[in-house]
Image 1 (cartoon, one colour):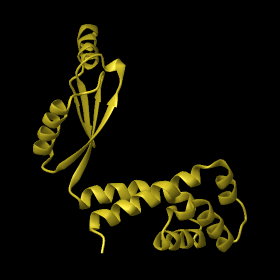
Image 2 (tube, helix red, strand yellow):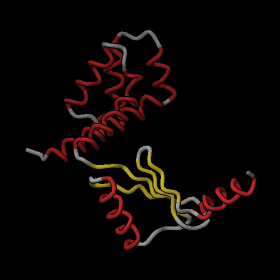
Image 3 (cartoon, one colour):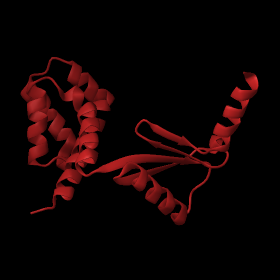
Length: 160
């Protein structure tokens, strides 16, 4: 039997794929049309192919019967959130002007795990407008250690 983490990973992959399918222009037309739920579900499942296992296909059928296939992107978003809560992990965005070293990422990860009292998953992004330093976002918390942020705060002080 697969581990719980593998099962959750598989579900997240299936939901992500199905959510992308709903964004397809041709599929969006089918979803807004007057197809019978069974026909819509089978068309959707055919497009997804082997990306959906039997349980994923059953979810698509139930959502089609209830006219909810357009909600798949929202379902994915909620699934990711609930999975993170279940696994006691937090998604942390780290935005920097250049790629960070493994050592820097390890320090940020350790500091954020201590501050949030949970494991963290770092999502690293490069943004040249940061200039130097980093911006760290975890939920509602933002730690702006960027040169751009300091310059903006200095400009605000000088203008007041």
